[in-house]
Image 1 (cartoon, helix red, strand yellow):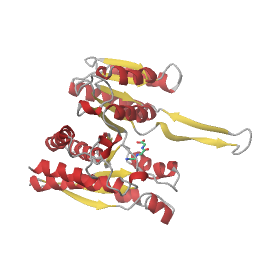
Image 2: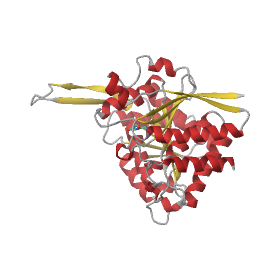
Image 3: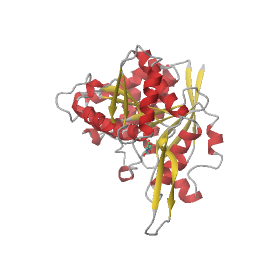
Image 4: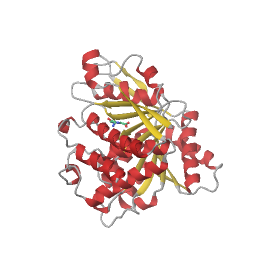
Length: 354
Ligand code: GGG
């Protein structure tokens, strides 16, 4: 029997509602697969914890999480707690402490009714963004000098180390080689004349080791335009932390919105737990109303299953999500339906079991 030990960090707002549906799906799989089980341990960390204790997670939170195979996170952020605190002291802290340097964000259209792009079908929008997830523009390096004075200066430094840049680009080449897909690097070397020139150099240098991989290189502004005008040209995209964060929200807009955008924060060496999460935030305006779309959180369960070499289940979960979208009669309001968060999660679980 294989057991995957999962730390649940439902977090804030709609986080607990969508995580509950992902757990429902995992429990359904457990009922069907006598060789696979999941253990769940919940941690009540997030903004409420911050308002009561003055911190987003326990002091030894990272130590506690180390014992798990995976972390399943809902959402972070809530009014009353500055966004940079909720992000840095929980989500980004976990990514950094566990060296989850690869962020896998699929941009995959599951049904053509979901895209605002005219005449685009599922085969036109189906690619993977591999986002650098440990440094770059989100390194947290900077300073605020002369605060409140007329000469105030604020610095936010992008950090592109040899190790960090090379390993994400190498990961992307490996993925392109394994799948036989093209690889596109997105950067901005014309304006960011240190960091992105370096990124482009490393992309070319590492590429020498993968002569069979077909590559393209675009500036981020051009790539944004192509995402909308000609998404079919992308198969695998590798890009920096900030560009990946922004481009994948654009990707979400092309494929049904944030209710369908998933992300895996991966430590490929499995030295530390990896973390699986919907890309969306805590959406406080709809929290507690049963309106949140749980499909992104359920899709992240599919990514989790893939990561633990349970690709058959990963693919089945994604297939059921696709079926539910195509059937249209069991969707949350963001996708034009009337179903509740729990209805949708329950349908995924029962369709898997049927
Ligand atoms: N579901 C996780 C969440 O709450 N994300 C909010 C967010 O702003 N994430 C930024 C990032 O992924 O870097």
